[in-house]
Length: 103
Image (cartoon, rainbow, N blue to C red; front, side, top):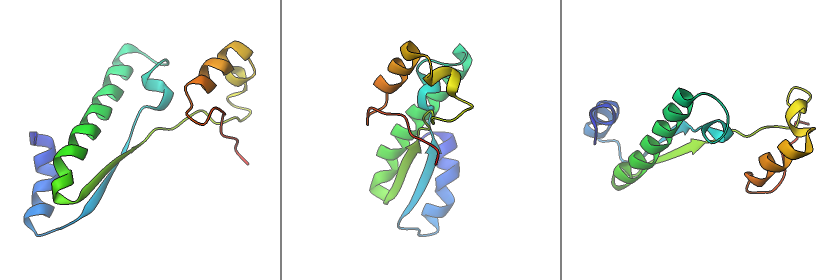
C-alpha cells in the first residue's frame, strides 16, 4: 500500500480490526465533462485511489466504496435539463436512463 493508505489503515489493522468500510466520494459527472482540467485530474485520482484501496484492503475485510453524485432535476439545475440537447447527454451517462427527482 502507498504511504497515505498505510498511515490511514495501519493502526486499526494492527489493533486487530477484522472488518470495516471506507466511504469515498467520486466525481459524478464532474469528472467526465464539467469543470477545469485540474478538477478532473483530482477526481480521477480519487477514483483511482478508491479502486486500488478496494483491491488492497479486501483481504483485510475492509470494504471500499465511492459515491458518485448525479444531477438532480430541480429548479436550480433547470438550465441544464430544460435544454433538450444537454439533457440527452446527461441522461445518456446515467445508468438508469433518467434524472433523479427531488421530492
